[in-house]
Length: 351
Image (cartoon, rainbow, N blue to C red; front, side, top):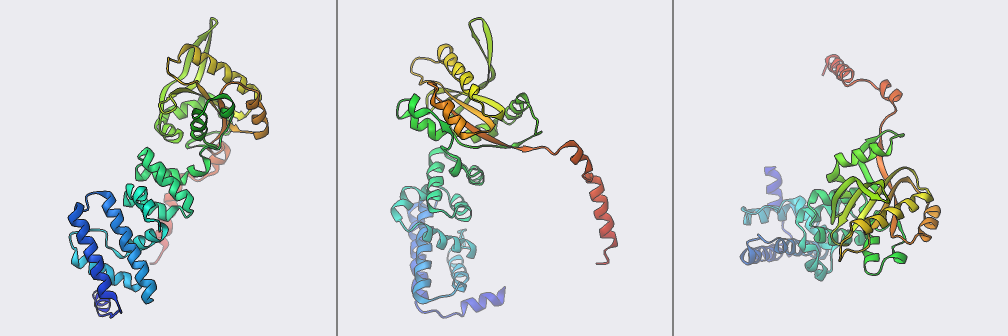
């Protein structure tokens, strides 16, 4: 490591001294302006460093090794600061190249932490998708872990993909907001269910992991109840899951189906929406909307059913992890047997 540092310090590069001095001045200015305590100043500084690295490497034809030399020089000049590792400097260069528009950088990108930006650079290569995740992070205040979860669950591709009749049944802008609210499919892979699971088992699993469910549904959902009781005409009826959405200012009825979508499901949902509007909707509330979550959906059949309904609803599929069949599970080796086999192999290994 010492030899490597000596090798880097002995490199003579045309224009390098002026380049390093310029970066040092930028760092000092940022320190004075905000002591780097404000995220936006830090992100803009990193963007400027990355832009200058990219420009100077292209101008002088420097190789990748210059980043290691630059990291040493910056850390020696600013020992109290973190973030000047070779790896982070390479991220700064990629960052600047990913966002050449400084206006967008200041209006959006600089509003999310550096760790968020690094994850986006690593995991999202499409520019439009990256911008969408940045905007959603700002709107919803996603933590880094939540952002990663949303990326890995392919939220961008699923958002606003549910089949709905909202344009025909809701006024604008509620129709557009409601449509963008619903996804297809919904990802409940934190649940493990048998292939022949009943709706009660699905509902129980979702209630046990309600926090995950709310995260998957999206910001703005407030849980009201499960098997929510309504009395209509002297008869008892029970809604699988009832929510209220504060941004849409309306109740949201969710019905769970462990089968393929059937047209009669839309009729039952329309009944529930009418009942909720009649018994629970308060003055100022928007019309209640419904979401039918089905194991599978024939989109043509669903479109026909929604087209003839006057009640606002959507149809989406959901995904869960399927449990192994009992016969297959029994054929798998037990954990104790695996550990015993490993111990045996290690004992026989002469190394």
